[in-house]
Image (tube, rainbow, N blue to C red; front, side):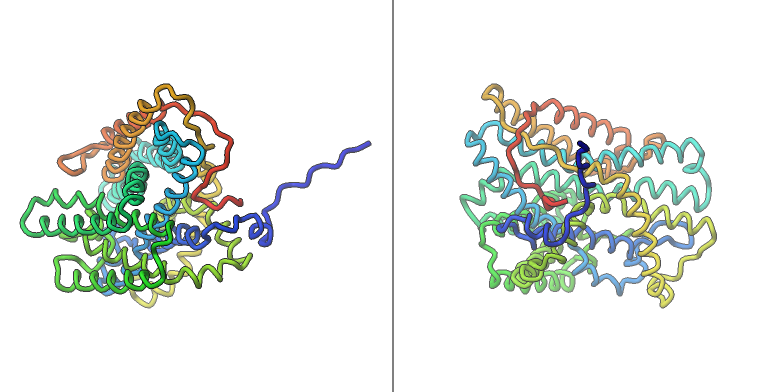
Length: 470
C-alpha cells in the first residue's frame, strides 16, 4: 500500500499567522523593530550620493534644506526602545526557568550576541574578501575616481556596524539596567538623561572633547531604559504625549539656540555631529519619537489585529536585519554599475533626482532581495541555553562579561576603520590611530572569549525578538 507523501512546506496564510501569534504578544513592538530597520534602509538609499569627483557624500550635506527630514527619519531610538522591551521579556523568562542568579548572565548574553554576530560575521567575511580582491587587482591604488571610490566604500559600508556594537553593549548591560529599573523605575531614565545633558555641558563649555564619548553609553542606555518602562506599562498615552511634546520641543531649542546641528544623522565635514558621539539633542529627538510610538500604540494595535497586516509584519521581520546589513552593499554595486555604463546621476534635490528615486529604489530593492536570499540563513537565532550545573557559574558570568566588553570595542573599531586589511590604512579611534588588522584582531579575541563560555542546550521555549511565525 502506497504511503501519502507529505505536502511541501508553504508559507502560512494570514489567518494561520494570526492564530499562531500569542494573544499577549505586543504586535506594535514587533512592527517598530521591523519598521525602524527598513526606514534606515530607505533613508540611506535616499541620502547616499556620489559627487562629480567620485567621492561618497550625503545628500543632506549637499542640500541642507533636507536635514529636518531626519527629525522623523532618525528612528534608531525606536530600535533601542524595542530592544529594552525584548530584553525585559527574555530576562523574565530566564528568571522563571532558572531562579538561581549565578550563570544566568552568561546564558542571556551569549544568546543575544550570537543573534547579532552570526549575520555580522557573514557580512564582514564577504567585505574582507572584496577588499582583498580590490587590493590585489590594484583597484584601491588606482588614481582618479575609481580608486578613491573603492577605498571609500571599504570604509563607508562597514560603518553601519556602529549600531551592532552599541546594541551589543546595551545587551551586555541589560540585566544590570533592568535590576536598577525594578528598584527605581523611571528615576533611572531621568538620571541617565541628566548625566547625558551634563556630559554635553562639560563638552561644549571648553572641556575635553573626549568627554562627549561617554554619551555613547548614556544616550542609548536612556532610550533602552524606556523599553523596560514600556514592558511594565509605565508609558501611558498621556505620558507619551508629554514625551513627544517635551522631546521634540527640547530638540528644537537645542538646534536653534545650542551648538547642535539640524541633522540628527552624521554628515561629512561637519564640526559637530549629533550621532558621533550622540548628543543631548539626539536624546531629545529620541524621546520625542518614542513618545509618538507610545501615542500611536492603541491605534496601531487595532490595525495590527488584522491578519493580513500582521502577516506582512511577520514576513518583513524574517529578513529585516539581513536587509539592514546588506542594503549599502546593494547601493554601492548599483552606483558602480551605473557609473561604469555611463549613467549620470542627476543633481541632488532636482526634479530629475526626485523623479528617479522610485526607479532607483526599485532596482535597489531587487538587488537587496537577492542578497537577502543568499545571506538570510545567517540571521537564524541559536537555540536557547540553560544555566547548567552549579560548577563555575560565576566564573562563566565573568567570562561572558569580559567577552562583552571586548566585542563591544572590537565591533566599534571595525565600523570606524573598515575592512581593507591589506591596505591597512590607519583611522583615528577615540584616542589614537587604529588599523583594520588591529580591529579584526580584537574582534577575534572577543569571539574566542565568547566561544569559551560553556553552553548547554535547553529545549524549553523562550522569547525571541523576531516574530515566531516564519
